Image (cartoon, rainbow, N blue to C red; front, side, top):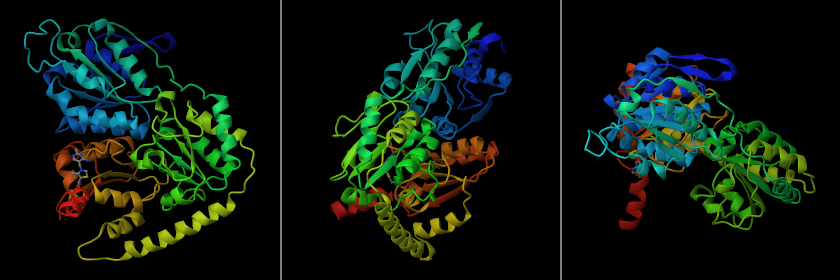
Length: 481
Ligand SMILES: Cc1ncc(C[n+]2csc(CCOP(=O)(O)OP(=O)(O)O)c2C)c(N)n1
Ligand SMILES: [Mg+2]
């Protein structure tokens, strides 16, 4: 039980489970995704009393993927609760996924009792070394009086740029024990302001560029920088390509939004401004042919060490975009370049129209997406879990609003689908939610359709059934015949 006192702090009276949930209430956490286990019963007891929705699933990976997706959809922490030992290990792929996508996932694990530790208790496993390398923080709450503070500090760490998952496990004898104390107030966790000299350098590089382009990545979304991105693009007249959760920051039909002509950048651009996404395999490891690269990140630790960059400002990405826009003094006219890109974009789109309109036997992904596009509202949440089938969706399905496109992200883990879909239905009760599954990917989580049914979470599922692991089959055939 909690009651709010002066200055935003709350006082909790109850057990360790009450303390943990009280600590998360201030972060806006209103649901937990979970699969039952005796080690975590007090969290359910607390949830019932605190009015936190319990969504129980069929596999812990679904719980943790749902929490990751909740974070992606709401930009606040998403919560998964799993039992000690196997519950935690089953959740680990989703934690790694959140680590790669910078999602503030809070995973609370049960833990074998502290008083009998080392004697071989049921599901007794020291999780921390396993979680350490895929979280921002992995800690054990050892004292009932400290559970609230430990969970609060972990959630704050998850939200601090560069964001990412955190793990707290609570020994069984701690979570069941009385826990009375204060719950700290939630403070905003802003990124550091960017270095003005590096921002000025970026602005100076953009001014003389004749064929510049922006690649807008997920960390802009996490940093609530969509308005600043728009101001920068419009001030400097920059074409914007989107990556991951960067999709929809500019609506696909904005005159500065481009998607079909990214491959042209390597041949023709003279400057590529990568904002809020790593220079990883999705961006050819930062190699854009002859173009100079500006790499802007939300934390100095995110600067690429493998690529040569002309400027690398780090810090709050909204401030960074506004800083570049303020320092931008036009020398070059980008209109011809924009026209060139728009013309190429239109040629590519016209070719797609033909593909998307043509029914074939067997049905091709382009036709499926041609039909789907016509039915999607601008705020539809589209989720992809699969190989080739989802790659086609990335090509054909346009995004118009932030947080409406959930792909597997740079970790590329199959099995996100049903968890992401459950989370999307809860986070966006009034939007269309469409889950695109490869038939292979579907096998990882399809039983959680039961979760959608039990919890009355209506979602449209489309399975691209090519009877195999298509994305692997085709290169395998090319290599081995
Ligand atoms: C957990 C996991 N296992 C294996 C892979 C490797 N992998 C990537 S795509 C793919 C094939 C996916 O098949 P399907 O979902 O049917 O989509 P398709 O390519 O056939 O459209 C595989 C096995 C992976 N990314 N993640
Ligand atoms: Mg397949």
